[in-house]
Length: 341
Image (tube, rainbow, N blue to C red; front, side, top):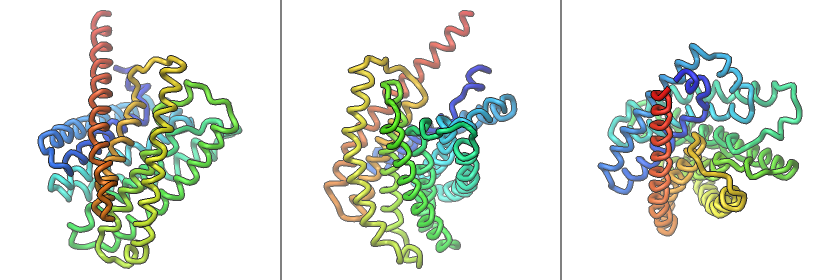
């Protein structure tokens, strides 16, 4: 247990993100029991990971500091922000908007702090150069965290009595920041792929976050379009609505490329597909793409987009079942081996 806590990946909150977003999709489609079951698992996973990370902070600060200094892992800390907001949005759908607001406040503060700390410790403050060689799919998690703040703000805005304009400003600003961060992360990752050798082992699951980041940008845009006529929203509604459709198109285009990369890695070069915490980085983008399509289809009256989202939701659920089963199997086998010693 001590070894597991010491080496706990900072991106493990992707488990909360993946489970929560599939729960949101099932809720939107009316599968109440299934959605509530996933919500319970999501909340339990969040509590367990919070305790384990607290333990790690107290007992293994050196390992935590090493993660902040490593650009290959440091951006995984943003899964904490996104995980909080995904859970908050699902609780909002369950009729607990106060929880959504409280979690948004926590996530917003964490997003602000990590948004300055992580780039400095992992990228700008490093003496080793070039840093570009370390760019990978986890860098897109910063985008996901930014857009999750926008989604949570847009979700809670209709049900609060005061502060609706402030929430509108927060939603539009965090959405805008996320869009520019996607452009930056996309450039860095593309340059890394073009300038340095790409081995099969390098194309890990977090590259799927490039699609998930676009999808949550679509969802955030669709939710902003539905917000009340605050000045900030009124000034950007048509722009955001149009860009949301564009981003959905690009996210759709990325899916075959990501599937092909997985085929090249696991089938062509026979790298075994075994459980790793990064596999949740596939579940979340699939679920987010589904939810984004459902929302965009409703907000912009695009039935084809909505139909694609509803179909994709079951693909995401199948992926969730597979990864969850692999995780449980790994946990049980580890406990059995430990007991045998």
